[in-house]
Image 1 (spheres, rainbow, N blue to C red):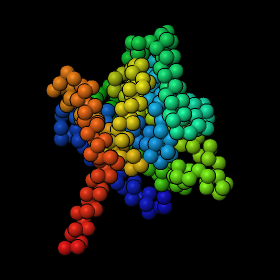
Image 2 (image 1 turned 90 degrees about the horizontal axis):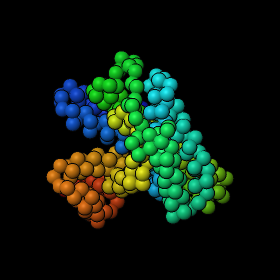
Image 3 (image 1 turned 90 degrees about the vertical axis):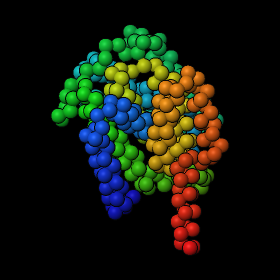
Image 4 (image 1 turned 180 degrees about the horizontal axis):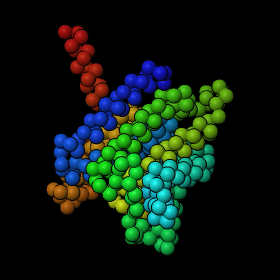
Length: 322
C-alpha cells in the first residue's frame, strides 16, 4: 500500500471511529452500547479468520482457540498480576502469537481438509485443558471472581460507555492494521501462495513461512477479539474455545463474503442481529438460525458484500448506458 492509499484508508478509519464514538451521545440505550462492543469483538475475530480463508486459502475450523486464548490469558493476567490494562492486553496478544506459532508450524504443512481438521483438533485440545484445569481456569464455570479493570488514560472500563469507546477504538485500529497488512507486499505474496503455490516456490518464495506468518497474524488478531469479549463479560468461559464458536466465525465470513475485506464485518453484524432477534421471538433458536444461514448460502453464494457490489455495478452501468 502506497502512502496515498494508506492516507485514504486511515482517513476512512478516522471518520468511522468518530461516528462510532459519537453514537452514545445520541442514544442512551444499553442495548446499542452492548451491541457495539460485541460487534467490535466479532468483527476482529471474523476478519482475522478471513485472512486465512479468503486471502490465504487456509480453511481453519479451530480459530476459536485464539479467541479463547486471548480471553483466558488476559483474564488470568489481570486476576493474578493486576497489571495496567494496555500491558495485559499486549501480553495476552503475545501469548496468542506464541500459541499460533506452535500450532501453525505443524498445521500449515498440511493441505485442505487435513489442515482444517488439525486446527479443529488443536482447538478441542485447548478446550479440554481449560475444562479439566479447574484450579487455574475454573473449569466448566469459567474464570471466577471477575476481572479487575483499573482506570487508564481517563477510561474506566467498568463503565459500559467507556468500554464501548475502548472496544470500537481497538476494533477500528485492528481492522486498519489488517487492511494495511493485506494491501502490503506480504498480502499480495500471500494471495500468490493461495492461487499458485508451485509458481511461488519457483520464484523463490518460502511458502511454508508465508503461511506461518499469516497464521500467527490471524491468531494474534483473533485473540484481540477474545480480550474485548472478556472485558464485556468480566471473565472467560469454555464456550469461547468450543467448536461452535469457530463455526460462528466461519458463518460470519461466508455470509459477508469470502475474500472481501469488509465482508466479515458485515457478516458479524448480521449474525449478531439474527441471534438477538431470533432468541426473542422463538425458542427454536438453532432451527431458525440454520434456516437463515441456509438461505444466505443459496441466495448469496459469494456473500452479501459481493451481491451488493454486483448490484451497484449493474445500476451504474445502466445509468451510463442511458
